[in-house]
Length: 133
Length: 133
DNA sequence: TAAAACTATATAGTCACTATAAGGTCAATA
DNA sequence: TATTGACCTTATAGTGACTATATAGTTTTA
Image (cartoon, rainbow over all chains, first blue to last red; front, side, top):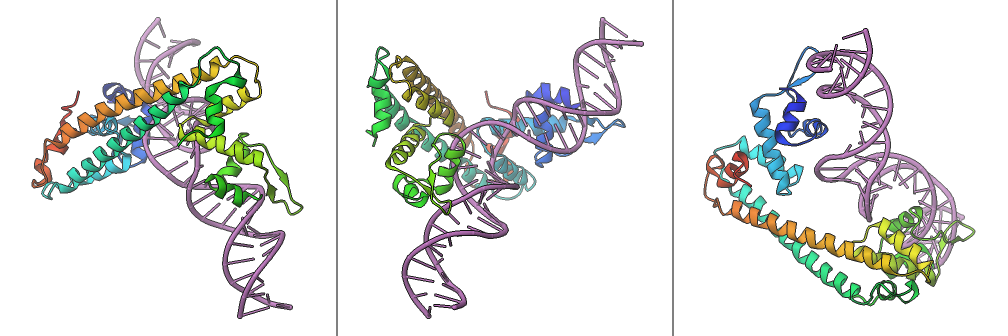
């Protein structure tokens, strides 16, 4: 299949596919005489793998790492689980940070309604005078 | 004061200060004969305002917008509150997304322990076979 | 036959910095 | 006096994961 069909079947842009190839995440496929890339089922699977990892917000470097593990099937899988544990910890800390941020924003928002002049706006005041922790 | 002292007093890098100046967020200060920037208390306040906004994850464009409002003190402050409401909504949706992500990661992680070979690793299997929703 | 849909490469833009290079200025010290 | 070190200047490139644009060649469809 050509790049457009691969793109549609996995749900990514053709540009993204070429980008993954340049980055070494997707092996360079054979070419037709006219230079068009021709992909196989293997490529579909490989690209789908990448996308699933991206949905889980693994970085391209981490995906690269996972691909290296795939090439060494008889090694222990501890490193894979560590990678995932790190990602879980990272996501959890992001959630915590955002919850703090939300509280700050909501509290700032509560300091004003919509019927004032900017001069008297509690929000701008709060931001200007550093009444944040 | 010079750029280093401003940087220390607000807790940013000198590069970041010059960057904000280039971006139009911080007004260009006067210069000494040797070309060094000299800052006033006004600049300290202005920079601190920017940093407080950044802590709340407002974009530089949004901070720019807030600064424009500061120059029009007799306009209604509805737009400011809308900006904040949008930011709150954005943060809340990020939190929701990350919570879904965390569930997926934890569930994937539960499919393996550390004592297998990569070939049998439940994590890699889960990622490869698309057993995700 | 001509238009449309597709493919190719190369290059620049996004965001908010951060890093690096290459150099000028100033005060204190050897 | 020479030099070290801390500070300042500008310009340019890099980060991550794409996304957009420009330009051109090819295939398919009307």
